[in-house]
Length: 119
Length: 115
Image 1 (cartoon, one colour):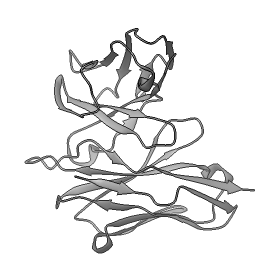
Image 2: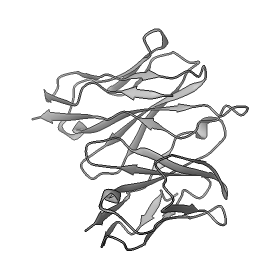
Image 3: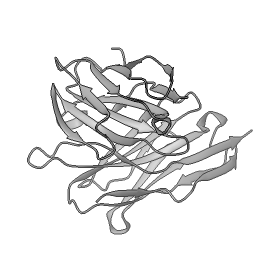
């Protein structure tokens, strides 16, 4: 069975600080996909990034960066120079691959990390 | 390109009543997913469709729940004989099934309150 653990329930930082959100996953599949979603106070889940299990290259997008390490089954998310608008709940999610096609399937989510950025 | 839409946004019902929710996916997406989210938790998978075929159902989907996607476009989720434990946010998402289209895009959800 697959599982996603986000051990940090709540994090509070002051604006312009860097913050890292941790995500540890478990799966028996060799092909899988990892995702991060943001859920602001408005409630709608916003897709941030997808990584494939066969691509461990780290990614940077503006102030966001992601560190994927298969050796430790972790997919951590760092926000550099945080802003008040970054305040939200962040979810890490895992999808195993469909046999044959390798396409992604349903998501297994972690319990989320509530990030509060104070002005 | 419009996103995923869900109706209604809010539903208050009395225990024992039936309710039905609708989801309209992104038009070119052939996969449609239903999830349920309770306060303080991540979304939990209920079921998904590829075109009109329902491919997987979670054990969370009891006999009182049924989902359809009759023409491979919009989907409905019906809950019969609602219970207070059914109170939650019901989320719909859609995605493609090819290559780089695996990201699931979520709708705003339908918040169900069973009194």
